[in-house]
Image (cartoon, rainbow over all chains, first blue to last red; front, top):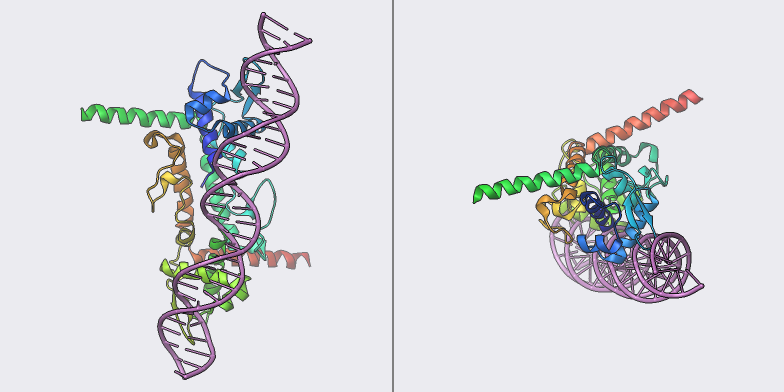
Length: 153
Length: 153
DNA sequence: CTAAAGTCTATATTGCATATAGGTTAAGCG
DNA sequence: CGCTTAACCTATATGCAATATAGACTTTAG
């Protein structure tokens, strides 16, 4: 299960990418539009900024902006910003090379060997889907539904 | 991150499959051999039994036995016994069809669409690796290391 | 009947995820 | 300069799930 942080982060980024004609967004605006607790979103956007995904400006006329184009921003990089990494077990963490506390022999641990495949499979998906891709899929689903509704009428 | 329960469960099953010449195992024996808190393991083995992975007999001479052969027991079925399912978001849960509390429109949610791919990728790995496979990989890693050590000497 | 061994119920403990409150700093504007 | 805007930072609440333990109950072999 991914965290609320990741979901809210993706929603906020989606809103920013989707809303064309603007480059700068207020926290309050995004929070309102996407139904995210404002104070919580504040911390989330800050994390995204610290990970180079957003940039910001203080003061009047300020706000947050996308630091990368939606077409080059991967979902993987967003999720990693919040989850630390995508490792299903501690010993596979890329960032902090921790070992699982209960593991006696990490080199030959069967669980680790299998979970390495899982981690690779997850990364293969998330690192190859961009924010633009995600929005496009969402839009496609919306159009598809509209057609079905037309049909029903 | 998978839970300790899943890891302990896999370790216990691995021990039982690996220890040939026995069909019945005491909780205390497995706990000792694998370094798992006995009372905790108790609950874990019970879960595995309730999921049809283990069978048990009470009383003297009793204990736990594998209900399926290691070659037909998938890692996925074990992990699902503990994690409920492998869904990265609630709305993709197979068992309980819950919707994500924060999601306004589940049909067109981009996050859901992407995470469905992730779930499929994870399932593809875990449902195609058996307990026997896992043990074999572990054994292979052990042999490989032994060779390297021989070489070093 | 007694001992062995699994099963059940309840409870502790701890850590993390989700938030919220309130103050601080930077920037634009008159 | 000083006021206002808006991001930034620190601390704290809160609740829930994961990890684990204790102790009583049930079944079965001999």
